Length: 304
Image 1 (cartoon, rainbow, N blue to C red):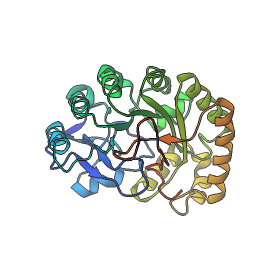
Image 2: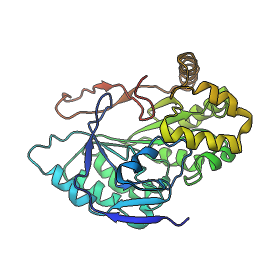
Image 3: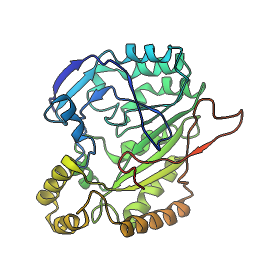
């Protein structure tokens, strides 16, 4: 697929994250994303730059590495964890051509800076050696968002991303290393991907891949995302349109639904020996040999 590419220079490599996250800073090498996930929560962000199509008009921050080094070498920087790609996937299709991430990994290695990353691509394995080198120096968390096991559904809801199987194989590549890995089952789409069979299969594959933890999160629908997603549902899954429309009168699934999902997920995670705890390091808050636990709050839902 051809994208409208806009090369830009950023003023700052990282944005400070407010509230609840196990990291304080977020770095996005791109604006817009070619994975074209129908449920993408970040569609609204293009309005800030008066851009058009979030999925096809991609902004590439060509000076991201230079900007990052200015931050990491500054006297005010405390070596705090950086999340790589909280709004747009760092390994979306254009990364194959622009190769922004290797320089970012090299800087994190140089300054021994901890990081987390979640991606729907196995292109991250291109930089495997760099990630392994960083993991010898500090904390590295690699996760993948995987919503199901049915490829027919995946091709519809995440048409620009790689197959589910390739994502599990990517996670498995880090099995037994210093890299902490996670399975992000989010969003869970009511009536489409929320069955016990789908969740059980996901946890089974996650266990086989050796993931250290899993996060399960119900779909949220707000603003432009709700319009885009419900239009998609009406066209391709009309049989569940009315039920979803009724459920999402507000931006969130009901408390009862989310509570039931959490209980079902917890039972299946226990069955497969997967924890829901996300451990991350914050500079200056960990003594030698000790790990501090932090609650992981999804970018999809900060109200749970």
